[in-house]
Length: 449
Ligand code: SF4
Ligand code: SF4
Image (tube, rainbow, N blue to C red; front, side):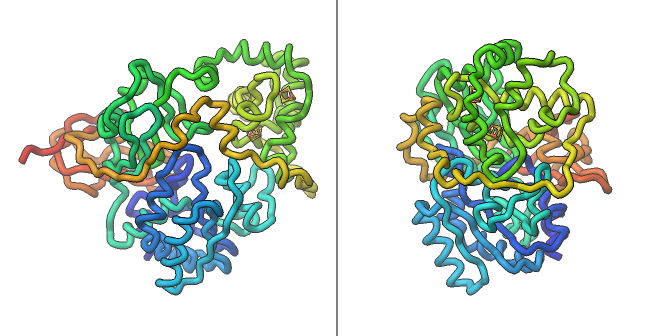
């Protein structure tokens, strides 16, 4: 019943790439872990949800934990989120449910799924594996609010998100899916600078874009935040990068100090990933000849957290971009990671001493002035129109099941996933009339009166 409600609501993971939640829950697990770390600096969306919807989230967490027959139901968050922990623990006590709070140190990327599994259980997810391989299912706290709402038949039609950075009034927004970023910016009082760039998501793993791209952006099921920023050296360099130059610099300037490897969170939990080796390999190989060599395959284990290039490298090189480049070449050649049987996974003995404080990231990214901005108030908004993407998840795109001119209500099905494919249905986020259907989106305009 609960699984069906989750599938009907079109729920996907709010914290990452949008894996369809109903598909994830078709299993049993020893641990059900809730990712409540919100480890990307500046974002406050999950903080808001924990502070204002703790009881709803805890109720849903307990029910999904029971569905998975989990022996341990754990909310993993950072110890210094004292207000949020208080709200969660009060909700747990009030509901009398077998849920506990696991308190982590303040480091990045505490919210990386595999890092979190290691922190909570001491187990390393196998290279190129997923948490269920070690008995765990992990979901984001915001996803649990959607699960709670799905129990009353509500579909995923709205999104909480943070808008912060160079804006007049940073805040949390509660908007329908498909609301334009331009309207979100207006709700924050507009930008404080004329020529800005933006980050869709957090400073480390978000997608960076310029004002020219901004007008095209809309809120999706996975939008967690919008950060408006100046054209800062490092962020802009990443955005503007020329892969030819990145490779040339990697070949000429890598001093093989290994810092990128030592600080890599996946290396630290025992994965055979050594970005310094990939960099070295690049120096002696023509990029066109990237093949299934085991060293190139290591790039497939990279979660693209960015620590190697934002924090570790003393030469200003970009191992993450190199890994992304290698991954693309391997994907083109159909090369997948070859797991090795009985591979011993050795956890770094230095791991506890090498955790990266978020402050270091903020300093490098030049975002320090935004750290102390208060992002607490929430504004709910109803736009005159929305443009809803037909794919906001991992899996097959949905197919439009409405026609131009149709009158529809919030929650009506507008995009249906192919029956047997991985995916999630998409629903109308406002009452109105369908005014445009493109291959990748449906536009709805609010009905007058
Ligand atoms: S981005 Fe760098 S630090 Fe992060 S997982 Fe990849 S190689 Fe490791
Ligand atoms: S940290 Fe930089 S210089 Fe050192 S090995 Fe890695 S890429 Fe090379």
